[in-house]
Length: 131
Image (cartoon, rainbow, N blue to C red; front, side):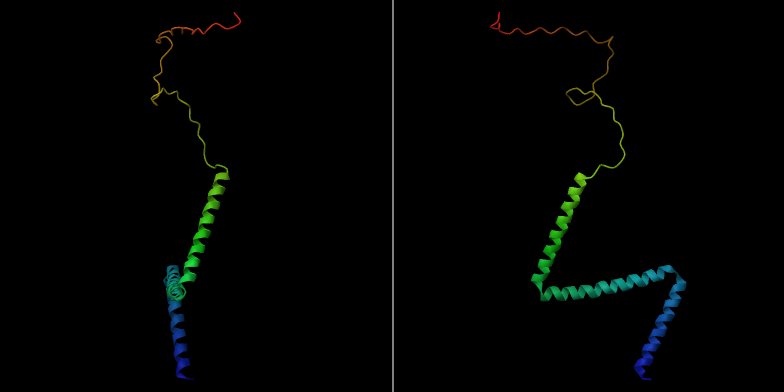
């Protein structure tokens, strides 16, 4: 056996021991490992993306523009579907109130306290041609 294989075997043993000890700690440890792996992938992906943008700026701008256009189209489609969709929710009956010209509710009075209305005078018009 070469030193390289023994070192890798020893590293694998240490990793498996750490994994079993972390399993005993609790289920949150596996979440932490998954989060660490995800963060490593994001970091590596970010480096690759930066290198790509530095080498091909026009392609990156075109891709960003395309993503923006697709996002706008999806937004418009959702907005259109929302206008045509049935209204869902709870309804509640609201009684109508009479309002005077100021926008405030009119004071309610009883018929016995109200003064009688005066009859309106009829406007006379010019005599028609028939008379």
